[in-house]
Amino acid sequence: MIRLKAYAKLNLSLDVTGKRDDGYHELDGLMQSVSLFDVVTVEKSKKLSVTADTDVADEKSNSAYRAASVFLKLTKISGAKIHIEKRIPAMSGLGGASADAAAALIGLDTLYGAGLGRKALLEIAQSIGADVPFALTGGTARAKGIGEKLFPVEIKKPMYYAVVKPFAGVSTADAFGRYRPGGRIDMDCVQSAVINGDAALFGSCAANALQPAAAEICPEIISAVETLLNAGARKAIITGSGSAVFCAVGTEEEARELIARTGSGFELCAALRPVSRGVEAI
Image (cartoon, rainbow, N blue to C red; front, side):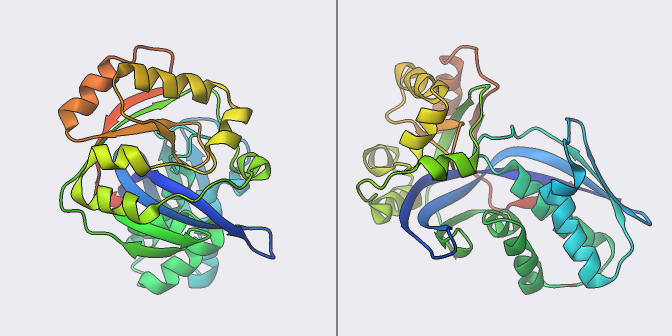
């Protein structure tokens, strides 16, 4: 048996730069693994099963199940028992499903000693979802393409994050369906701010192109943004397609103080720090 932390991610900024012939959107963004995590347990078994401590409406549509299915077929291993302790809210833009899929792949490869290697695992990850390759590696990265082209970013000074998630969620497909092109986001400015831990610069140039569409679907996002701003945030933006909203600050203490001022009324309200990987064995 192996137990792993599957870390959440923040899209520190996200721009939509075009649309491909296959219907997927071309993206440019900065992604950061953060200290909120699910716990994924992988055990040997003769057949594949995936359970969770929250409702799993359809096991076979679960990202971890799909990732494990591909892995088992490729390696000709008969099965595994996977259990997920959910801490990352669904429909939040925090990448919980992708993190669970990545943890399932790493857990299976480690438990069975399959030795597939990074390239093969990344190929499986990409077939499951655009965020799974990042979840597999984690840390800080510039993401392009549909999110699968990753360029690691080395941070000189970390920033910390106050994150709130309304009880309502947003479907990624719905957010992209309502997306309308706007002005370009200066992602080089965002990257410089992230590298140097410059929360003031980050506040001046960070943005998420999906935020107007997400707020149409989930007006609670607007209230979450206002709550963080009223608590002292310089800027508050969604991660992914929402509905979680975050702000960046210079110290962990600032993040905790800001969260303490936000009050209740959220599914998630947390001060989070950056982490250097997407999945970690416990």
